[in-house]
Length: 549
Ligand code: ISL
Ligand code: CA
Image 1 (cartoon, rainbow, N blue to C red):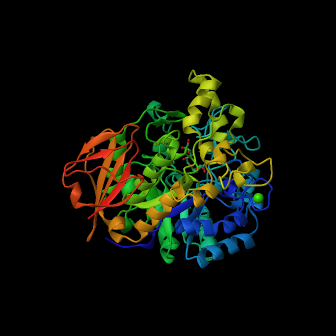
Image 2: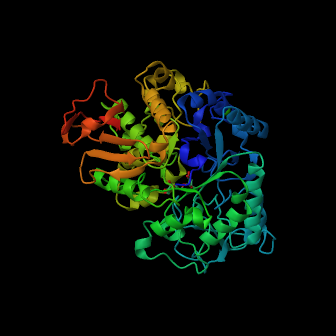
Image 3: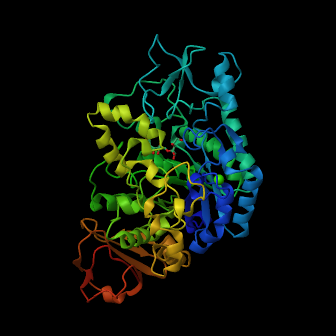
C-alpha cells in the first residue's frame, strides 16, 4: 500500500459562514476560525477544508465566485487569510480550500466582459448558444430550478448555467480559461495551502453536440453532465501543469459520476485526482427533495464497493457536509438515542477504510432543524425547485415536510458553541441564518465538560485511529452483509485485527458470533461492559463496540 499523508489524516470541513462570528455582524468569518483552531486541535483533526472564502455576491453562499484572488468581504481580508494559514501551520495542521471552477459568478469581470458583446475577447470564456426564437438551445435543466440556459437580451444568445443563472458555466474547451484556472490555483498554492476540494469537477467538460436529455435522464441530469468527453484530458493537464508540482491533495466532489469515471478519476496511475467525494452513501434513498426509505443492507454494500478497490485508489468516508442533512437525524436516532447513535456514527466514520471527512457540528451530535415554513429556508435550491415540487402534485406544506429530511439548510444553522443566544455563534441578534434552539443542551461548552460527550468520543476515536496504521490501512471485510440491523466488519492490518460491531437499530438483540472472546474490547459507546460469551454478544439499541486482537 502506497502511504500518503492524506490517507492518514482526518479532514474537518468548515462552512465559514456558519462557523463563528468574531466581529458580531451576524456572519461567520476567517478570524472566527482562527479563534477556534485550538478547539479543533483538541478534537484531533489535522486537515481543515474551508468552503469558498472568495469574493462573492453570495447567491449560492460563496459557490458563485466574483474574484478568485480576493477574500469575501464578510469573511475578512487577505491578511486574515494569511494569518489563518500560518496559525493552522503553527499547529501542524493542514488547510485545503474549495476550488469552484466549473462556473463563476455572473458578476465576475470575465462574465461582465463576455456578456458585453459577441466579439469581446472574453466571449468564449463562457458557453453561449443561439436559441431558436424563444427556445433555449436544448432541454438541459439547472439544479436550482428551470432551464440551464438564460437568454441574454443584449445578444439574444443563451448562456449555460448548470446551477443558478448567477453561476454561468466556464468554457473549458477554451485553453485560455484553463490557463486562467491554473494561474488561480498556483496563486493559492504558492501561499502554502495543502490542496483543493474541487466543486462539481466532473462537470467541466461539456459534450459539444449539446444533445437533449432523454426522458429518463431528466431526473438525474448529473449522470449526463459528468460524462463530458474531455474530463480526463483536462484533469491530466491540470495535474501535470499544477497539481503534480506541489505536495498537496486534490479531492474531487464527484457529483453524478459512474463507477468507471470514479475508478479513472482517483487512480494514482492516471495522474488526475487523489480522492473523490462520492454521493452514493450520503444520498442513499434520495430523489431530489424526497428521502425514501433505505435499508442497512444497501448501505453496507456501498461501503464494501468503495472500500475494496485496489492499492491505486483510496476512499473517502463521510456522512455529513454543507449540502446534506445531519447524519444523526438521517442515519441515527436524534431523539431518545441522539448521543448514543451519534457515537455509533462516529465509530462507523472513523473505523472504515478511507480518509474520514467530518463536518462542523457532527462532533457534538448536532441535529436537523425543525423547519415549519418555506420562508425559513435560505438555500436558493429550495425556492428554485418549488414550482417543480408543486407541479409534481404536492402542497407547499408537504414540500416543507420533505425538506425536513433533505434540505441543505440543516447543515447551515449556526455552529453551536454554547447555550447562549444564537448558540454562542455571534452576539449579534439578527444573524444571516437560524440557530437551532436545541443549542440549549447541544453545544461545545457542555460537550467539553462532559467526559461522556459525543465530542470526547470523537476525540478518543480520532486518537486511536491516528495511532494505528493497522486501523488506517487494514483490509476491510464485511462479516454479515445481509443482517438488517447489525453492521459488523473487520479491519485486518499487518499486526492487529480490529472488529467493529454496530447495532444500527432501536432494538436490542442477541448476535451470534463465535470466537469473540479471542478479542479484547478497545472502545465502545456503552457505559457497562458488554455481555459476551464464546458464541454470542448481547447488543442494546445503538451499541457500538470496537475490539482488537
Ligand atoms: O445535489 C445537489 C443538486 O441538487 C446539491 O446538493 C449540490 O448542487 C451538488 O451536490 C453540488 O454541490 C456543489 O456545487 C454547487 C453548490 O451549491 C454546492 O454547495 C456545492 O457543494 C454549485 O457550486
Ligand atoms: Ca463576522
